[in-house]
Amino acid sequence: MAEDQINDAWAWLTGAPLRALIIALFGLLTVIVLRWMLTRVMNRLQRAPLPTVDTTGRVTLTLGDVPADHARIRRLRTLHQLLASTIGVVVGVVTLIMILGTFGVNIAPLIASAGVVGIAVAFGAQSLVSDVVTGLFMLVENQYNVGDRVELGALGNILAAGTIEEVGLRVTTLRDDDGRLWYVRNGQILRVANESQGWSLAVVEVALAPDTDLSTVREDVQAFVGQQLTDPALAAVALTDRDPVVRVSDISGGAAVLQVRVHAQPGQNQQLASILRRRLYAEFTRTGIKLA
Image (cartoon, rainbow, N blue to C red; front, side, top):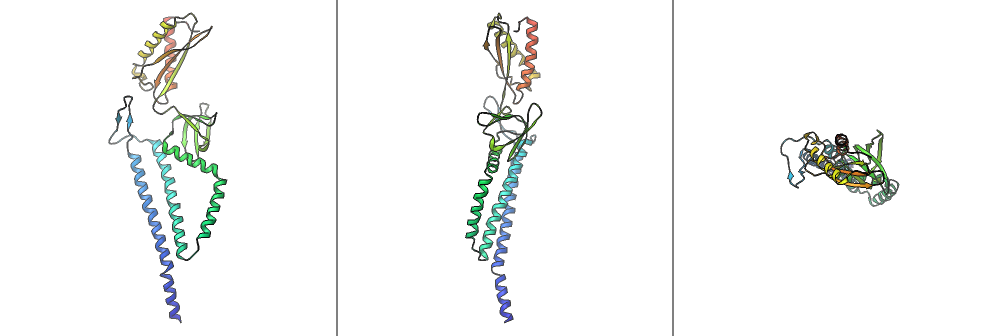
């Protein structure tokens, strides 16, 4: 009798428990291997240089050691954490279901109950899910990075404008020109205006006296601004390979307004506009051009 009990216990231990242990070890090994592969891919992406495109459309790829792109590294680390957590949850749930099935547990009611709970949670936390999903797509699409100057908008209004300080899956943090720190939920962002990608535009408007010869002054301003762009000191803020545009933007009884538009380096449009205002004022003072 005792021998039969021992044999039954041994048969049970080498049956469902052993299979459950093997399934658990296989699940753990799967998580380790998938996370290891994910880490290798993310590390390669962090070290890989990005191709750059100049104004002629030529693609340049730098080989060897390149400066670290901290914004890209931070974005990839956020994606790494999200994907690693997703791998652990998915593999863990599948492993648990397989182990319960090994012990003969009817998992159909559990799956149905989990589905009902999942639907309830989805309805209750739909705004949170929307924020996270939107933040994930923003990270993947590289809509903005830390340090970019952006304007975040919704339907018909501006949510916030300033410099990005942190990009998360749920909330984007930026600081405006008054020093205030804004926390904007990613699910509320429907449009993004980024001044720090590609190039920006410096716009300077000058109100001239009504009796000014606009044709002559416009040509003089065009030549003066073009000459200023050859200054090596402006190479850090201006795109010197593009001609400036000078046009009459407004005419009234009190003034004629000239608008100067110059292509600037990403995020440097305000700095370039300030420099051009100072130099244009000095030039007008020297040549005797009257302002309104």
